[in-house]
Length: 259
Ligand SMILES: Nc1nc2c(ncn2[C@@H]2O[C@H](COP(=O)(O)OP(=O)(O)OP(=O)(O)O)[C@@H](O)[C@H]2O)c(=O)[nH]1
Image (cartoon, rainbow, N blue to C red; front, side, top):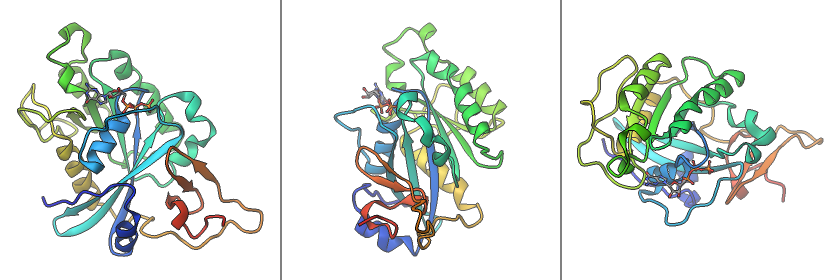
């Protein structure tokens, strides 16, 4: 599959493509420190970031993909794992979501146990069963240097993925795998045990799954509808604003942006 890389900052080219390609909102959730920011950065910018800070609220990255000749845009919502940085905005993260990426750190079993509370948050925010779910065990590069009893086994994770109808991957945001697997579909299939995936395989699987979906709602921002009372909500993140009137990445280009 041919694909193109797009930095989240290059809005000029993204906005010119917005009218031509379908946009899918992909929510990335998981405990703090599992590598959500590194993973989304690698997925969108093609590299492991050199410096990391905890995400405050939500940050956005975009990736343009060519799936069987159709251009689609993945809008990755990298949410804060720390409760104190999520607060009351959580319900907005889940609005109009097209796919959910659950991330855990395979060298940190508590982050795997924590997946049940992320599932519960999805349930509370009415994420429907038909919304595609992906399970990503990150930091496979640490597998060789750690004792196996301190790691989340692939079997255990695969079992969880099957139970919750998720496509399962093990990958590393930091380094590329020696032996690649294309992920495991819910109910089995996929690569041989012990193999891991490249982050490219994860993004390709998300794109392929979403392409088959009906037209999403966020191909371009709708006109302002907040009214004089100013119902538009903005969230300041590390680098951007999100307008919950449009429910799309908009920053200062947004038709709703004040001033
Ligand atoms: N070895 C290794 N370290 C990683 C990998 N991915 C992320 N890290 C490290 O894990 C730490 C946390 O990464 P983040 O991407 O900030 O984690 P996060 O899930 O976004 O954390 P919050 O923003 O607090 O929710 C950083 O020190 C990263 O360098 C990986 O694949 N391998």
